[in-house]
Length: 208
Image (cartoon, rainbow, N blue to C red; front, top):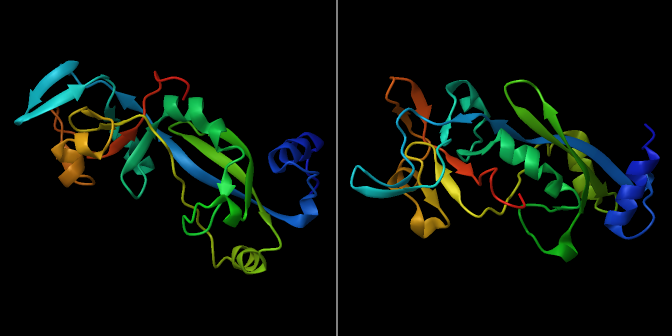
């Protein structure tokens, strides 16, 4: 259908030239979903000894609500509702690459818009991708359904273990749970089952 004028203008700014929707395949994807988090009972902040490991617990809201476990992605990474609502617009103007070959000259198109869609128990982030039709094989693969999924990447200041609450700025600082048990199940103090996952960032960080 017709592309709204303001979206054409936005795409023109992103591409740096007049945007003609007919020259691009426009596709929509729900790229990431949020989880809701909470602070476990008696979870103390600061430096805490946990099973022989010195936990750096900067934030109390590190546990994912059990009903949101289905929104943890296949890599066992997760984003809180606050983080995604704050950061989703950073998708806009991102490049469309194939197989993570992130060389700008090999970009197949751009993300021309992103929206946050609250579905109740999660916030879905939807993106609109413009793939240049000159990449005929890729366009054919998308239109035929042969290529029907996307992968996303993100840059974060750190991640949080959903089991112990440890904050790690990089891989060398990760706790044993994230290093060796990511994706495994565990039971909390109340006997509820959870998944060891990695929360990306925190909504108190600036700018995103």
